[in-house]
Image (cartoon, rainbow, N blue to C red; front, top):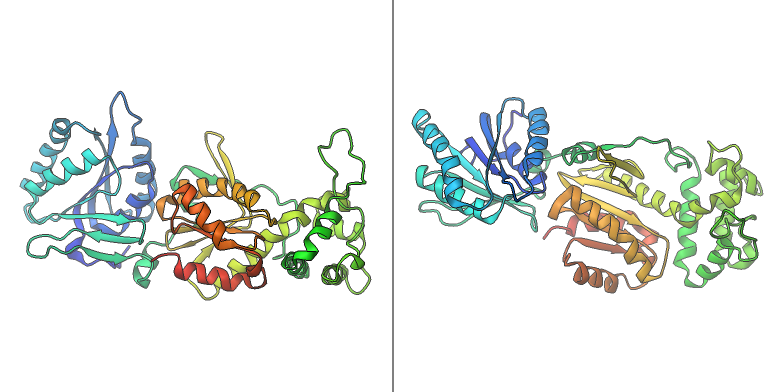
Length: 432
């Protein structure tokens, strides 16, 4: 890292960071606040009666060393609450730095750690280094805050998403964000055709979206998708799915779907159940139309969301994640994100479900909400793409129930016709 967007007077030769349960804020702070060839101390909690944050510190040590090889990184344990133990652990080190490097700049970043760790470390450093720089990351506004000192009592604030140089300096990929939290991408083979690789498939997605935009078309569409007259096989919990293509006579909106399916298969009248199955499931020789129910039920909406992300990536500085990306941890923990992208280091996760039932949509969002917070911390934003009518009522209900004001966005029935525009507006307004 040769260009430092934060002025030198606010960066440190010796930077201390307090470890919390989320490594992301400290990782970003170290990238921004450590001077060239600085020494960074990762202070983690330790003790017999607590869960140590040492593993978090070790993850940061690995990944920070990859992007800032110039740094000397030290992992050090301190008490999470005992003021005397914190002082005994830090004061000799601080005195040694002051003696050996009398003109150095010292900094403390206190976003993580416990409150006692922050208070006692702050007071101790302040008593030894009068010009020390104290900082934290404000997750609500995605800003680096630097405490006032001396005659200047006002805090300084550097927006990490509104300033282009800082946005570029904190850029990450989904793989690097996941790796920082101990996850790796699980690159399993895709069992379904994707719109990016299958000409004409996106038009089918658009046509199905038009069906869902017509309230009177939803019931016949679900009737086609779930033929109740079909017998349930002994090993099936429910009917597999439709055996015939949607009939144009069922609703006028079905004409667009039939036309798009024909074009997908080669032209007017070309679509057949078998042909559609071969296209949607290219790696399954025995695939038939009933086995494609999952795609018609909701995967089309994930394709639509992924395409919308690709479109806004052409004009906004975001980094899209792979469609339906899977991540796993060494412990066996596994999860999937329908669609996602990064804006600087801020995670935007998108959960998709084709339903106009508010309660079902809310339930579907819950896992994505938890996972996004695990990866992106308080800074993460979570979007729900569904087919409800009153999206604002659903958003407010979710925010109040989960204490997630400003962190959740809902895209409903009306947004299906212009999802890229709706996503664009989300990115621009997601941070106050």
